[in-house]
Length: 300
Image (cartoon, rainbow, N blue to C red; front, side, top):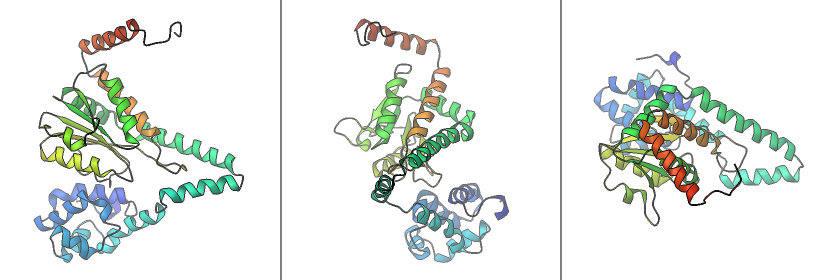
């Protein structure tokens, strides 16, 4: 196992990543505690050691052993970066909205505009700098080869994932968007199985329906591709493949710009992994639209 000096003890994502790496080599009881934390990383900063031990069904000392196995002096040292992250990001959505109004009252809109631009560029740059080609190619292959790929987006993720589905279905026929009208994601996933893929997206504050859908898909043996904002996300621990997208912004709600950039990259990789039938499908799709007069004449 790597020593504590090999990762950043102040970074919650690095701690979770180290916990994932060390999981297989842990003793069975310690592994039971580690599994609970990997499945519920958001509980680390808000629940006490005794509370987590109780729900994980292990003695409190097991959490101390787990922390020491990672190189920490004790569980509270392991917990500290998660508590700090909560303090740094503790402003609620209404609090951030009020901050934006304060900017207007103080006449600092120009400063705000610069901060918005900086955050947008940083988020998109991070996607291109930190996403590996192998992960994108692997995700594309899994989506293309699946019997059915369920595309899941709730709340503000809905439009981005629906856009991915809308464009992707031009090339491949196995995409199903969820939730369908007047249904829950779990309803649409009633027949998901080992030959299928669930491609799900959520970011903080994480949608319960999306988390529950990844649990269900994993339990039924499906492949789970998760797109989220952190390795500590509740849909990250169950992912067979994880795509990370930053959502930082001075805006009152998390930014989806990086998510859209990731989806556009993935669509390009999907087409690159298909055969001539996909090109024929795209061509047929385009011809039908043009013959139906969908596009405004003379606009090309």
